Length: 267
Image (cartoon, rainbow, N blue to C red; front, side):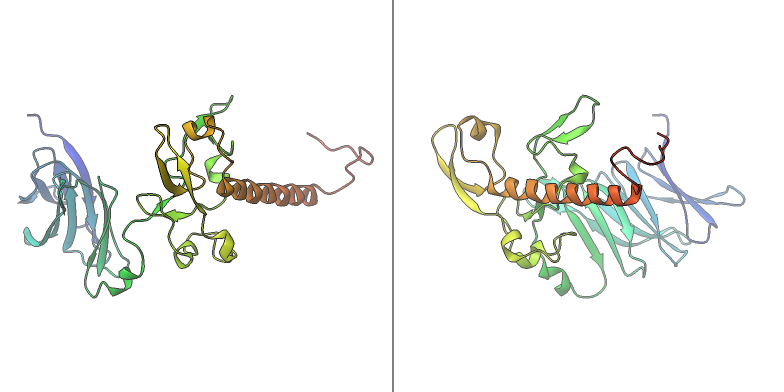
């Protein structure tokens, strides 16, 4: 197998360079002389994450598709700490990215199963204040492309980044309480009735009646002639208000008469 470098990173003071190779080894080099100092052994699959400590020049973090996360002392070429991302009933989860906190006491990782892992010193009590499962209700809404090939939300015909803030739901689409909805940027000052989408019982194509968040209707439900979504009506109303505010701001910024009189302006 021809060796290939998959990732490279300098340590905090640039005295060392660490390279990840597709044979699962990490190599530590002297950045001035190019001398190979250490081979770091531990990973069983390719490594695409190398993260240096924010202020300790000895520490380097590595993570890979094998689910392993290592903290190394690159000056000694030794492992300081090891964590394996085992997911119950699903094997291990490949680690896609990691970042240290500014104080170097914690680091966060994301994996192939959509999990956010937070590891470090101290107590986890503060993280227990939020639900384990958090999704936006619009995460799996269908998208379309307009005549200019731009992406639009199929139901509201709006660009996704221009839509109002979404609602937080669990993996089954059930909305979280009001206190969690206020964590979404843009919903901090909303009235309570605008923070929790209504639940409704709807019939599926096979005649089964299920409870779901109104506003996550499928194409089949639209074809059955069900009542329009209250949640999506709320979203359209908020978008209309935003468009009106933007239009007012543009008119104020342009200034001058709008009826064609006065000095003509360049296009």
